[in-house]
Image (cartoon, rainbow, N blue to C red; front, side, top):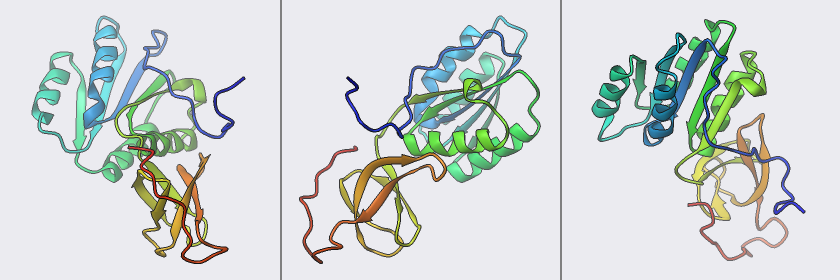
Amino acid sequence: MSSSANKSRPVYGTLTPDPTARHHLFVVRSDAVAPALRIARLLDDTSASLAFIVSGASDDCADVQERLRLVGTACEHYLHDADALEALTRCLAAARMGTRLYLAGSEGFLASCVRIAESSGLAADEIRCELIGTLARPVFCVHCRTVTPRVTTNIAPCSGCGRMLLVRDHFSRRLAAFMGVQADAEVPGSLPERVDLFS
């Protein structure tokens, strides 16, 4: 029997290379570069092209760029996820047959990248994901349709309307977020105990 009844949440694995691919695009958070570098080294002896998009600030960004340069890999670095996602959209618009996409980072970051990749025409078997870092959840308020990023507790205020939301375990791939519903809708002010579950 499955340990979770939640069938909507993606299942993540460990990044592995696809030796049949001709082009490899890595999109990773700055705290999740290590597994992508491992794959890049495994592909170093092939004739395939490699490119990196790194998102987020890091004290060792210069070191990461140097390591990527040493394996002969092009790298674009962006401080903000929105800029990295825009770069991903641009790269996929110019992508050729035989491209594989490797993603590493938080759940919200992975979901946003997968949504872009699928809308760009990549099939599920052309996208590989590894969940690294925080388990914090992006939460979609079903009342005002705002997404509150990086929620770590079972009850959290909506960044849009201020309602206290119960963070459900249902994940919407279309919205790249978990669902949040007003926790005290029936009895205003009566809230369950707030527990840190997703840090």
